[in-house]
Amino acid sequence: MTKSTINPELLFGKVNSINANSVHFEYINNQHEPTYFRGNRYGKGEVGEFVIIESQVNLVLGRIIEIKKDDLAKSNLEIVGKIHLLGTIQMDTLRVSAGVDYYPSINDLIYSAPHEFIASIPEKMQKDEAKIVLEIGAIDLDQSCGISITPEKLFGRHLGILGATGGGKSYTTARVLEECLKHNSKVILLDSTGEYRDFNSNDVFHIHLGQPLYEVTSSKECYLPPESFIETDFLALFEPSGKVQGPKFKEAIRSLKIANLKPDVFTNGFIPKINSFKKDYLDAINDPNLNLNSPLIFSTLIFKLNMNVYSLNSAHLLIVQRIQLVGVILMELLIQVVYL
Image (tube, rainbow, N blue to C red; front, side, top):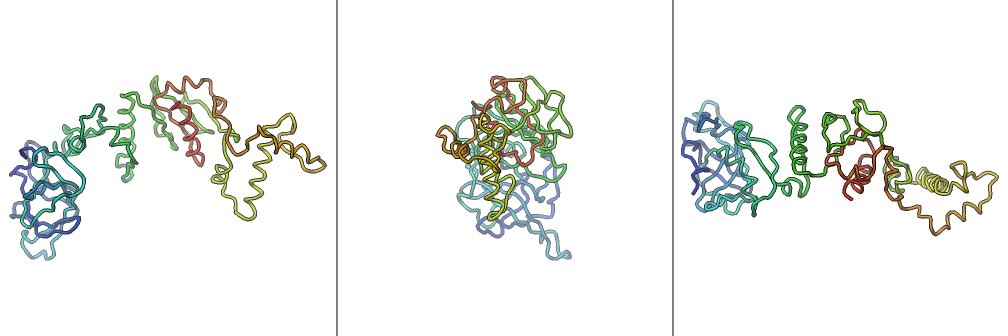
């Protein structure tokens, strides 16, 4: 039943206090040093280690977040630790669910969680058999225990890859991208530093804004014409002050849009006000075919590229370099093309 999760060789402690989201434990003997089990190292009570608490109703999954000894003069039996409770493991199916259904009791035994079980947690949280899984990594202490997860679990809500400098964030992101490409997924990557410029294959396209520090040879230059922005986009970019700059800024945007959309009337690209008749301006504003509050239909004219919408649709990974303030707006526009 619990052969793969509960192993006597990995027993190291017992529960001595319980609260809503954690339990405290004490070691059951002095021999709580790290050990090797089936060729792999287990801390048997180290900070950061995943553990399993054997309660009377089910198994509880947790992680050690603190170990302390109030008096260094006392024996090692006085060392206590704290476990953050993460989830519940059903004894019959070993299915894992978030949250704690039944809390442990005092004196319940605590074991180090086997590496292969930790690696299988994403799979054991699935209700149905997964058709597609992404192999995103492995247990750090046992590289043979690969970790796979479904795209629905990984991208279903929000995904954050966090860590210190040099902790492997970029490597993890690259691994996720590679796995997505294996399954013909479509991905838009906003690469502000050119970190992923070495991604090259037949289904990867690189485009850039301005002059990137590390420009990819095959990268195509693109730009965003102002006609594609709505007024709120400009306000978000330039943040004019509300009482003085804001009204003048809005009027300037409106004037330039009219001049650009009516080149036959305003031949200089702007609307002159000095020594000019107001009729042309009023006629342009009242033109029912002129919609100043919506961007133009996004088309291949947006990109100064030597390729068409079909080419973009065939891309599985579109990498955009030199993204600054216009990153979010650019993403919204690209999605309209890549996901047609």
